[in-house]
Length: 69
Image (cartoon, rainbow, N blue to C red; front, side, top):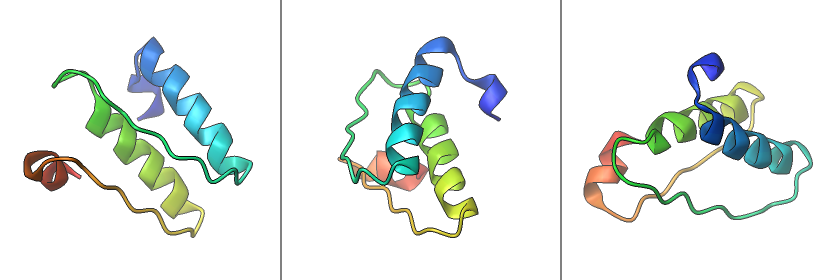
């Protein structure tokens, strides 16, 4: 699924993946208009973390967004 990302998603994915791999413990806030792929990107990142046997939790500012996670 990583190959389906657009350039901006790839940039964000690389930044967050780097933070995860280096165990920096950073906090990221994704904010973009609906339909631009935030949920897709977040699900890729969560899958990556969980695949490595780690625990990953996602939070969302609205009930609708939370149901998509």
